[in-house]
Length: 79
Image 1 (cartoon, one colour):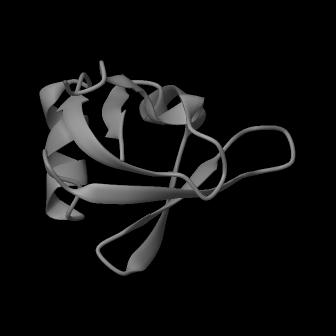
Image 2: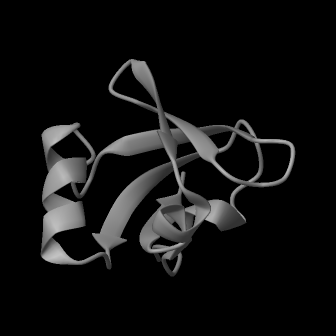
């Protein structure tokens, strides 16, 4: 049984998960798609900035920083 999707921000640092859903408006979602963050893509939560914003993830071999409110709208299934 596959686990329920949870927000990207619920992962611990170093955890790997797969993108299950992106609940952002179309324009923001399109930008993430162009950056390679597609449904089914494995991502690793690298770290949170000192005050929790932004969030750094590793996707397709490079690091990407997202604002916390964006990362909370990206649902993942932990690996």
